[in-house]
Picture (cartoon, rainbow, N blue to C red):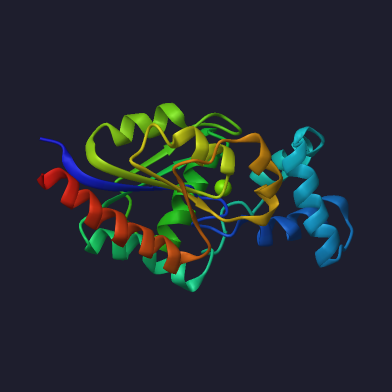
Length: 210
Ligand SMILES: [Mg+2]
């Protein structure tokens, strides 16, 4: 018999605060200091076209910064454990570089911040699609949630998981025009994720009892 429910997290920009640390790495790499606005512009530029940033990406992946990302927020720090306590398995699908030493550094970073709360952590490789990995997890459960700050990832997941939740990220807004976001939930903060989980698990229970 399948387990009941799973919540699958993205890592960068959802569980861990990538951008804050990446800014320091970017300044080191280029030997410059940049303002908050200049960094915001770099993020926007990177998301529109990551190709010019490949060298920096390799530098970051192999730097000490990579394995020491902080949690996204104090609220997020408790969400995976709270979900576990309310009957969820908690899993991760991340598109981080899947080289063995990178995977090990990221696993250790997650363990230090979140403890041993995750039942599965799947690395699909940088910029790779998450669909296969999501399917391999979701098919083991009656009900599955997936939360990612990439609009593209949540739209691609909406027919794979039961509930696909976009963790709102202003840098991804430019993609809104490109995707059909029907049936994608949107959460601005951890409290809104919790509300979505609460309202949908209740309605789901009602549906399967019929
Ligand atoms: Mg992300």
